[in-house]
Image 1 (cartoon, rainbow, N blue to C red):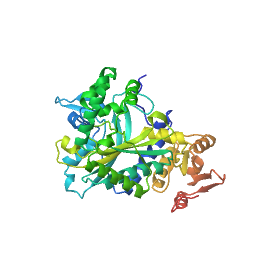
Image 2 (image 1 turned 180 degrees about the vertical axis):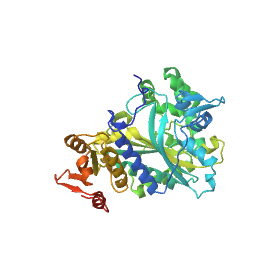
Image 3 (image 1 turned 135 degrees about the vertical axis):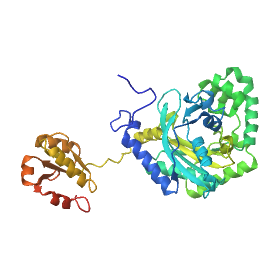
Image 4 (image 1 turned 60 degrees about the horizontal axis):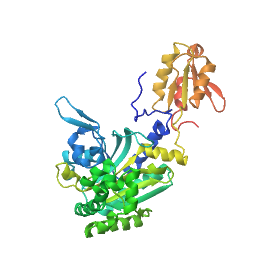
Length: 428
């Protein structure tokens, strides 16, 4: 029997792994949508694959996604290389440029959710196919947008019911600040090059900042020994003023945060603001999501200058946090009425009646004739409020036998009476 690829999962109501239970998944995505739509953001969907260049240029040639060959790349019939989406921001910026959104009232605030694909080693909270809610605000370089994005992200988590949250705020500066910082780090780490991991030796030449984010224990020991100065000490006047303004806005918004001077980002397009939101109960992989500003990304994709800021929320990570906090997921509604055919002829009668009632109430039917006792058991398992029996006796009299499952009260009604019963508010 064939099975799903390791690192991927089916999402369905009774999934063994909590993050892939469909009601949990839906609770997270619908909550995020309600919060973001309520703030004026608009939904957008981009293809799950793009030309490879969109992501190569977008995430940067020194990112792990490119360097460690984490992208799923395929060739189409015309010989063009395509890639499954390893992150959504570059695709949304590509869509902004392609569809002329620059003439819309700025900023254009967009959100989406969907699958992300990365060929990395599977572990708790990391999958080859995972899912992400994404928000982007494009067209305006203002620290107010950065603060609003962080506030919206936190509001999503709090609306879901999460409490053990920690916002970590940093800045990766402007490109010239990063050049100075990378040169400082290169000089610092070069004497230890042979002791670094293979990945960090590559980063030492291409982007030394990424060494600070290494998952290698050996690298972290070297970093602890050298104690490099943080990026914040290398900010130029404009980037520093921008960062300080974001801090002031967050304070006025009442969003608790701590400044993390050592924060770096895994994607090359980030400038200035960078942040992460952590959950204090889920251990080393505690980041539920993160975001930042990427004012140069549009130009990296061959477009005009378009400032932007946004965030991504890992849906599976959030589900793990919900499970850790024991937050109950709202139950799906149960059927108001379960129509039970007692003979073969009653099957179509049940379906016809159900279709007439379904605009008003939630109705399920039995698809095979059963005894009243078995039909009653099915109705109780589904949590129905009423069960309606249709059989030869009912057909002869032109009625439905209706039983209220909570009170046990049973009566017979003509079809028009049944329709009247469910007119207006659903019966209690």
